[in-house]
Image (tube, rainbow, N blue to C red; front, side, top):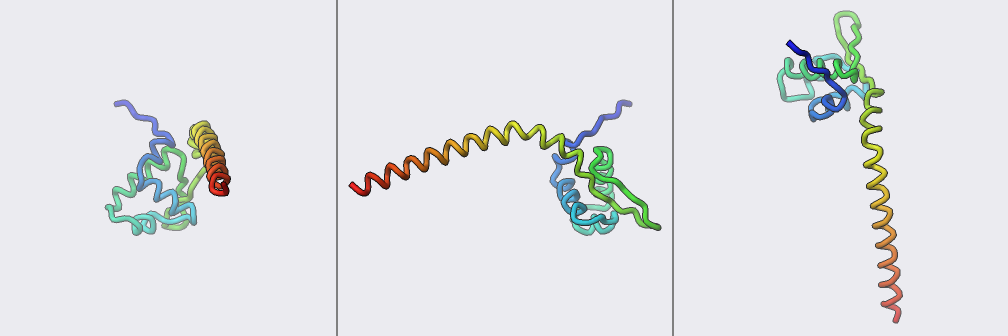
Length: 114
């Protein structure tokens, strides 16, 4: 049996897992408190939590009888690094579009004055 290596991209590909990350980014929550925010079964939430743990996005700390999930955002740096060239490209395109629109508006303004 081969085991698949999970990565941060796989973790954030699922909207439920992204919502779980958003929830516990505010404050650590126990598994029941997390599950209460979703309309899926607790075992399904536990499976999502397991994947997030495997990807290094969540740590589970035991406090008495409760297990609290805490977010670890450092692994998202890998996603940010991957996205950066695309962000720069779109930023450049929007800047060029802003410049073009400003030029067109200036031309229209001077044509209206004639």
